Image 1 (cartoon, rainbow, N blue to C red):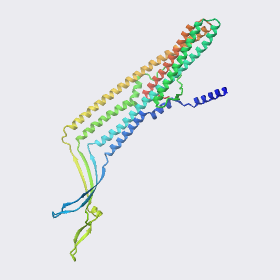
Image 2 (spheres, rainbow, N blue to C red):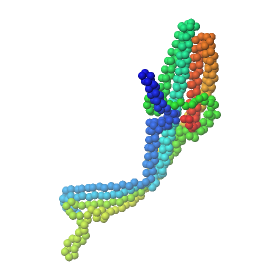
Image 3 (cartoon, helix red, strand yellow):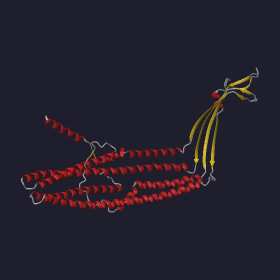
Length: 455
C-alpha cells in the first residue's frame, strides 16, 4: 500500500512539474511590453496626443449652431395708439449661424504641426519606457539564471561533502583518521547544506523580482534556461564611438530632444502670428413667430369693396416663419496695433524656450555619449574579468583533481583538501558571476546600438 502511495505521489509530482509553465526570455519581455501598467499609461498618452491633432484639424472648419428662444409677456402692455391694454403675448425666434477663420497669422496651421509633433513625442516617450522595461526584464532574467547556476554548484558541493562523510566514517571506524577529522568533514557538509538553502532563497528572491517586474503572481513562476555557454570575450564593437554614432540616429531620448527643438521653432511662429491681422467670416439665417393669446392668427390685407368689411389673411405659425425669414453674411478684419507689448514678450519667451531646447539637446547627446563610454568600458572590463575567471577556474579544477587523488591516497589532510575545494567553489562562483556580468553588459551595448537584446 505504501509503495502504491509513493508511486502515485511521484507520478503526480512529475506531472505537476511537467505542466508548470517555463517562461522564456522573449515571452517575459513580450508580456511586459504588452501588460505593464506604465506602458499602458504611455499608450493612452499617445491616444490623447492623437485626439489633440483632431482638435487642431477642427480649427480649420467652420462651426455651425442653431438657437431657439421663447418669450411670453402677460398683463398690461402699450398698444400702437399708446393705450394700455391687457394682452398675453408669445413669441419665438429661430436662428442658424456659422462662422470660421480665413486667416489668423498661420496659428491654426502651426498648432496642427505642434499637435503632430506631440504625437511623435509621445510615441518616443513610449519607446523609451519600453526600452527601459525590456532591459530591466533581461537583467532580472539573467539574475535568475545566475542564481540557478549558483544553486547547481552548491548542490554539487553538498553531494561531494555527503560522499566525504561516508568515506570519513569508514576511515574513522577503521582507525585511519581521528574523530576530529570526521567532525571537520561533517562541519563542512553542514556548511554546504546551509549554502544550498541560501542559494535556494536567492533563487526564490530573483524569481520574485522578475515576476513583480512582469506584474504577475510569483506562485509557481519559473523560467526556461537559455544556453549562455561560454560567450566570446571579443567585444562586439571596436570602440564606443561606433555605438554612439549609431545611437544618435535612433535613440528615443535624442529624437525627443530634437522634436522639442522643432516644437520650440513652431512656438516662435505661433507667437509671431499675433502680429498679423485676423480675418473671419460669418453667416446666419433667422425667423420668428408672434401671437396674442385669445386672438386668431390673422391679419388685415384689405377692405371688401362691397361690404366695406376688412379682409383677413391667415397668419399662422408656418406662414409667419416663412414671411419673417432673413439672412445675413459678414466679414470681420482685426488688425493688431498695440497690445501692451504682450506679443513682443511672448515672442521673446518663445525664443528663450528654443535656446533651452538647444541646450537640452546638447546635454542629451553628451549624457548619451558618457553612458555609452561607461557601458563600453564596463563591457571591456567584464571581458577581462571573464577571461581571468576562466583561467582561474581551469587552474582550480586541475588543482582539485590532484587534491582529490592525494586525499584518496591519504597523502593530504582533510583541512588541506577543504582549502583546495573552497578555492574551487570560489572560482566557480566567480566564473558564473563574471559570465553573467559580461553577458548583460554586452547586451547593454547591443541595446544602445539598437540590436535585439532578447536573442
